[in-house]
Length: 494
Image (spheres, rainbow, N blue to C red):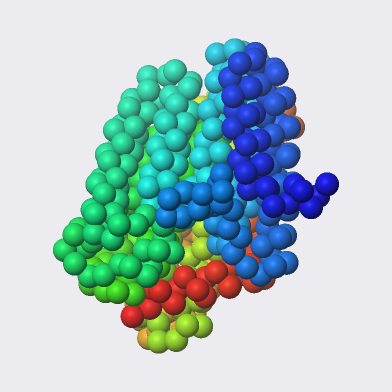
């Protein structure tokens, strides 16, 4: 029986999500919640199975949909990088689903949350498995539609305005990306990444196509200065949605950029592109950190922290491009991808905890949370643990990724990138410790904390502790990444 199921695992995993999302749309809140919880558990099992196979066979898993592979059909391709991103999505997604079951009141006004969330999860899985630049556009659109619906689901004025800004920005990014896909296809005649790697050549049409694709994806990733839509969307959405957007959704467009750079950078398609993205990443780190420090609302502070943390992801590109040997390039790429995992766990925990705190205190204003640690110690502790990873203190996953970045910068002689990592950590410490000090202080008036159920208290703690655990036991993740990263970074080196 297992021999029959195993070859179809990618299709089964995607089908489970799509079926669950459709079923949740047709039933009332309680049944939709039950369907989502079952689907989340099944996803963890199936994605873990897929990851185990990729690890055991040490290869790229190619699944041909309908028996029609590239270039006429669509291949789902799963390597170490995509397996890690799928596993991150499954873990964070499962915790978010459990948290949401305790967070939302059993009202049919929130019934659509479950179907939209499951559709978003399906779009992420398909995106990480896709190996076709047009199919990725389809996944991005499904992701955008679901995400915008989730942002606006509360129906509040601020959320609706944030959702409108989000959809206009995201659709603009998708349209720019699609124009780029059309130009690349006109130049090469293929859409599959593997075929592009063999047929791409330097010409104005392809250069323009790559530039448009990258610009569209940078807008969707919210890299500085195209981050204007992110803070309102993340801060005004309900807590489970904020966690998903920050921990997972922005990683989807970054993942596509990573694959595009594998195909095009080694050909010097756009000279200086890697360095430009690195500079924008440094600007994001500084600007996002400064803005986070000045915020008066907890969720807005966490949202600007996401702007800063996204900047770290883009430091891998100039470091890989400057590497003299494959091992140094792998070190830099692994740093960026490991940071994506660490940030996903920590930021998911931070936004979920923020939701718990806001529910307990009845306010999102930081000044109303003074003395929180005495009356709600677990949420305060969870926020502090997640903050340790954001700052990059040992033994967190954030420390590992930043250590890898600094090591690769020293190896390449580009010490200024290491300086940006260190400065970013210091700036993160300012706004994280500012909040922790507030939690441990005392307010002008006695703090009133409402009763919170255990689900929305413990679920974020699980993610926060995982962000520490991968700092100590993160070697299996790096081992899983290594074969795929080695192959991909070879294409990025000059």
